[in-house]
Length: 96
Image (tube, rainbow, N blue to C red; front, side, top):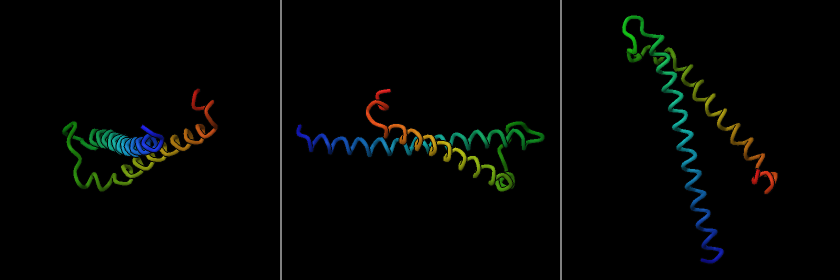
């Protein structure tokens, strides 16, 4: 295999890794939203524990759900930017 074949292979792997990273970010956001929905379901039900949330309850709490998604994306984005910035320092930083 020559240099250009290695380069093409590395690009394909990089695209795949970016795709998997985006899927994992989506999975984390969905998991956080699910946890928020569970917490809202417990606190919203007065008679039946673990009762599913009604449409009215979902509308009432949509701001909280949106804030949870935004906060999760912000934390993941800032952590990714910080790590990218640290790794730009060179090979020594990558080795550590």
